[in-house]
Length: 626
Image (cartoon, rainbow, N blue to C red):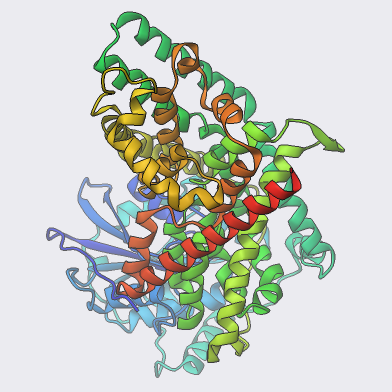
């Protein structure tokens, strides 16, 4: 279990945002600070404390921490422990907050108020942001803000964070000196026991006239269908299937536009520069390498667009509920679903999101299988090979064959991860224990365009930074290794065959020849350890330097389609389903598990699975194709 480490910061007034999961806390943080922190509609998304700066109405600059959501100050998981450590002043390198802003979900005061009582017992000044007030009003809840403030003995501000309402009032409240001092509230619990807090909250709600049962919501009627034991899983599979269909069918026009732009840029630079090392670096190295990766940005954004829609609508926790029984059969609980789903974007935030899992064994198993989820970095590799070797045609009812293959690759990764979890269940004593799933199901609502736009912009920014950072760096390094030393006098092959990179590729090809990899693929896998997308840029650079004449100007897809066999392409797809081609993921596992043992085990078993899967795929495909 890792300790929460928070870096030293300059002195100043420190506010902390605290609240239950799904109370709109991060949305309020975004409004107060102008931060672009992504807002999601399920518990456990905020797994680290996040800091921003806000200006009060009087212009005072204040530090603001967005702490992970928690239901109580008795931590059950690592992310809740971060919140408790900060509030208690136990966080290393961080002082105790000067003021706590408790964010309450106005539609569920019974549960949210218990956290307020616990925070007050810490002896900290408290301000309450009564959030989601519009939803409460639509459900027939009329909350007297002044009466609630008198009962609790703390200031209360009505807010609707998603619309920005109440933000100015909250900032003005922070300029009042009295809110920064601890006041004894009218309502206090006689003890810190849960029973005492339950009784206190019950009496308070009764005095405010808020203790009545609410009518059923439209979400309840929708859940009768979406959570049906038979219809629910079928609907979930259809939703995921259509998602992957859209990745190919929608992305073709923008991908063609990016390809055309990259080709035009390469030809333009070639026309202005004389033949030599500089032109080779720019055209064959940087443009061919980075352009080969950049072209897949539309597919990644389409995938994330649909994931964000599911997050914002409130459907993802339902998916966790539907998969709880299936995940229980392999020794996990439905709570592992959200970290694993996050791993489809990137395994690193998925691994970090396991801090919301209270059971140590479940958390470790989820960490170990998270890299097997098909992250967005694999998508360029899949798209390249599918586009080169799988014909673009409809198979039935408008369904694209390429989308079916992509959907199958995602399923293979999921099945492989579940198989590993099942093996761990059989060989660990704690694996057979039944851990019932308890999680909140938020009401359905229309996704907020602002949150989706922020999420897509962040993903674009991350992708472009990777292209301009690690991918560009590795591309230049590979170009240098592929260009020196030059070909000897009288050489008949391409110059790259006589370079350092050529030697490395031919050496590795002896090890990887049984799974059908040529020396170009073997070479591309080495810098591809930095990030999976680097393999695409590496292939683009290697083939640009290997080709001659008109072939050098060809896009990567037709080049590999003409030079690889179908069994080789299928073998490389199988390799990327399992191989741990990402050093950053291994570093995240080391940080979360507190040592090198788990990363070493992960590296060994994933490479072993990748080699075995590629070997079987290559041999079977070769046999079937004669």
